Structures are given as structure tokens and as C-alpha cells.
Length: 292
Length: 309
Image (cartoon, rainbow over all chains, first blue to last red; front, top):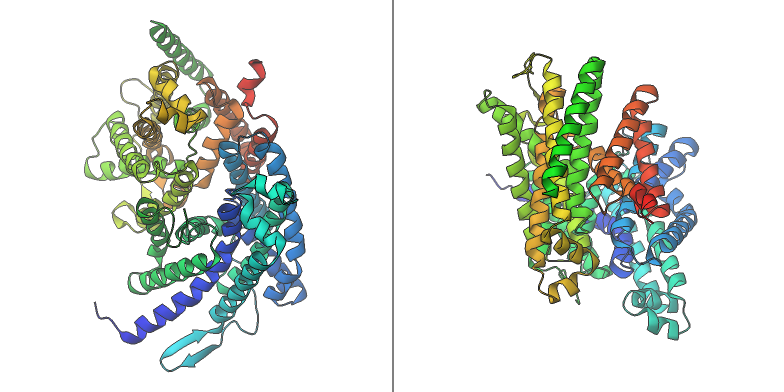
């Protein structure tokens, strides 16, 4: 194989940018699965929902998709709070969260996909924004703005969440809640309330992640499934709940996927994430930066 | 002795079902009935791992499609192979896949296994889509023989009969497990894996047995599919609705006994067949999703649970 240096450089750069986007997609699961131990496999469905809302705002009102997603974040937060409340009452308090909780989220994933198909059909939808199209050129390396802007937004969101988690009382309580709810109670914080807030936050990130997704690629309802493997691979490899680990794992996966699709063809890239996941689970289930 | 009695009753019931279908004489009965029976097998197979052992498998579509694609390959290499032999090959292939997957992920927490099965469906689909020998993303055509072997009738009738037989086998296996040492081991894992391990239950080995059995039965259920649809492409073989249905049916019927998946599959399968004809197929899937969520929240023990208070 003729390994062209330009091609390699470009593949690595676009992999890094793609990785930033993957971090935004995964960060919500890092909160729900990593910190709260709630296996929200429906997270990609909320992301696709976010994509469709950004699409509606863009197509009907001409608003920038990312701006629109930030505006609807509170609504996603409330949605997350409601879903966590149902989950808590039906499963966590009864103490059988495992099978039925998983089936519950799987049902939500499926319902939202079918509902989107019924409303919007199976056509691919896309948005228009000034940064979709042009690219920056740094020497031979090309930086497409449609990847650069999402990457920067994603990193900003991750950094803000990191600050929130480490500097505020509620943020620290969220990190503690899965490890020791009793100690949290002694600190005068209600574990259920903390979890509800955290789950709301995790769903709120899906709004922005969805807008970024539709900026990067056209979206159709069943696309959520392709992201489940990626999201959980990144989350597990990043060490469940570590934000910096999530970003590093996301960028690693982005680069490997980008190289695979450059040199072997894009139809192989879904298999990469799964390979990552299996190797991680088999060799080092605590993740690259895990504390377990 | 009781197992023998049960098998005899099951065979008689199956014979009655087939006789009834012959009496009705409408070819659509076989066509729709085949799908319902296929779901009975899938739901029962899922329940061996999910209901008895407590490990959720989201990758039904992968095991099922592996069986189907094994048939596509065999049909190309050795078209004269009888269908039951093809089913055996598909079953063994899926069982081995389940064994390998299980070996890598079953030593960890149950959720990791579930996530891995979900991702596995995507990967096996990627592999098949990129494999030109079985048609790649274009799909493969299978020419269905026009007449059933062994008795006079349409080939669909033969497929129906074969699937009916597989139902009897799957339910027989599930019931036998339930009453055996193996079943008690599975239940111990489901209720408290650490305690089971501590009291000497070989948990990993039992989980691997459950995964292989469950995956194998799913593969066998998938093997006749190419002959049924005559055109198989990855998007339909790996359809997510297989995974949703096979999870919804046992959970709605009740996961603790062999009767749960049977009841769930017959009810939901028939409901879907009716809804597909009368309303639309997308809406019938929506009904399944909504029913799954409602049952999981409101009736955690399923329909069987209503009668066992």
C-alpha cells in the first residue's frame, strides 16, 4: 500500500476533530452510566431527537443549529428529570434495575426511532450554516470547518461540565452518589435528587450533541444504533465517568476510525468501535484511566 | 417420566396446530403462522439466557442472521443439503459465536455483556455487508423449491412444519432446564451471582452453556429465513425489530417459566400480524415498543405473574 504522508496527516487531523465530536456524544453516558450506574442505552436516541429539533429550527426558522440546541437544553434537562423519575420509581426503588431497566431504555430507544420514522420518514435530513462547506488550510493539512466548529463546541461543553463537577457542591455530590449514597445523605444531600439532576444534565448534553451530529453528517432515525457501540466503547475505555479519559478515548477512536475509512473504506468503520470495545472489555475492563 | 409426558403432549398440540392449518387451507395462514412460530422459538431461546440467568442479550438479530446467512452460503455451495441439516449448521455457528462472545464478556458485570451484544449486531452486519459472496449490501436471492418434500403441499407448508418442530424442541429444552440442576444453577446466578459463586456454582461455565444454547436456538430459527423471504439483504436480516420483539415477548409473557415466552410470542406475534395487515407495519412496531415499556413498568412479572399470586 502506498502510504501517502498528506493522506495520513489529513486522516489523523480529521480523526482528532471527529474525536472531539465523539466526546460530546459520549459525555452524557459518562455521567449516566459512569457516575450514576444507570445504563441508559437510549442516549443515542435522545441525541437523534436533538438532531431533529436542530433540523426543525434550522429549516423552519433559519436559526443556527448549534445555537438552537443550546436554547432547548433546559427542555432536554426536564425530559431527563422526568425519565429518571419514572426509572427511579419503577426500578431502582424496587431493586430490580438490571433486566427491566435495560429493557425500559431499549423500549424508549425503539419507540423514539419508530416515532421519528412515522413523523419525518426515513429520508436523510441536513442543516445549513455558514461553517458548513469552507475549510482552513494549514500547509498540506485541511481543517474543514464543519468538523472544527463541532469539535470546539464539544470540548467547551466538556470543559464546562468538568468545572461544574469539580467545583460545585452538587457536582461533587454527583461524583459521589453511586459510590456512597449513605455518606451523601449524611452530608444533607438527597441521593435521589442528586441523581435526578445528574441524569437531567446528561440528557441536556444530548441536545448539543445532536446538533453537532447533524452539522457533521446527514441524519436519519435509525442512525442512533450506529452510535451505541461507539458511545459505550469510548465510555468504557475512558474509564467510566472520567471526563478527561472520555476525551482521550474519543480522540483515539476518532483517529483509528478515520485511518480505517481512509485506507480500507468507510463501510468498515462501524466494526472498529466494536473491536475497541471487545479488546477493552477483555484486556482492561477498568478502562485506560480507570480507578477500579 | 414427566418430561416424556410433556414432550408427548407438545407433539400432539403441534400436530393439532398443523392439522388445523391444513383444514383452514388458506396459504396465508402458513405465511403468517411461520412468523409467529419463529418468534416463539426466538423468545424461548432469549429467555434461556435472559429470563433464567438474568443476562440481557440485545444481539438476537446477529445470532438470527448468522443462521440465515449460513443457509445462504450452504445454498450456494451445496444446494442439495436438506433444510434440517442447514439449520443444524446455522445453530452450531451461532452457538460458537455466543460462546466466544460470552467468554470475552461474561466474566464482567452483566451490563457489559448486554452492551457488547448490542455492538456485536452492528459488527456482524458490517462483516456481512462487506462480504460479496453472500451478496454484500445488495442482498442474496434464494430460489425456493415449489413443493414440500415428504408430503404433498406447498414449500411454505414445509417451512411452517419445520418451524413448528423447532418450537417443540425449544420449549422442551427450556422446560427441561427449568426443572433440572442446570436450571437451579441459572436461577442462583440470576438471584445473586456472588452468593452462587461462593456456594460452589460454576457460574462462568453455566453462563456459557446458557449463551451457547440460546444463541444456537436463535441461529436455528434464522436458518430457514432465506427460503421464507427468498430475498435476504443485511438490512432485513439484521432488523432491530427482531431484538425488540424477542425481548418484549418474554417480558410481557413472564420470564420465570417456559410458558411466558410462548404466551408473549403468540399474543404479540399475532397482534403484529393483524396490525401489519390492517394498519401499518411501522405502527405495529410502535405498539410493541409501547407495550414493552408499559409491561416493564406496571407488570414486572408479566402475564404469567397475574395467575400466580
